[in-house]
Length: 132
Image (cartoon, rainbow, N blue to C red; front, side, top):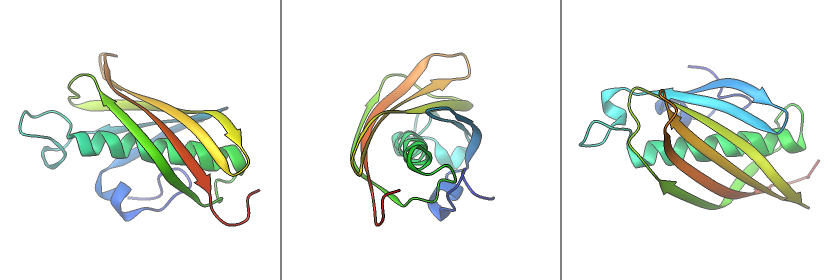
């Protein structure tokens, strides 16, 4: 498996996250469930959903500061709300909602194939090193 947008992360690769497209203010991504990514009910594991939301918001933050996405970013705050079960394929849309100095504010939603809300999240990311 290759890069998740501009990032090469062994854990993201392990979770089978897929890049879909860049947006003017964010990204779209997805995960197709495999048995090892599910919980005891056969739905997406909460940790997988948190990873999908966080990784997608991190990439959106990187692109917000650098068109090539090479700016290093660290999540300093993440809040996830789980709403419903995720089955089969889960789509995520992450967007930048604001920026102040090295801080980037983000939100994301994860939806089932049928379009029902599975989870939503907000995050604050901090640019590390030279901020572009």
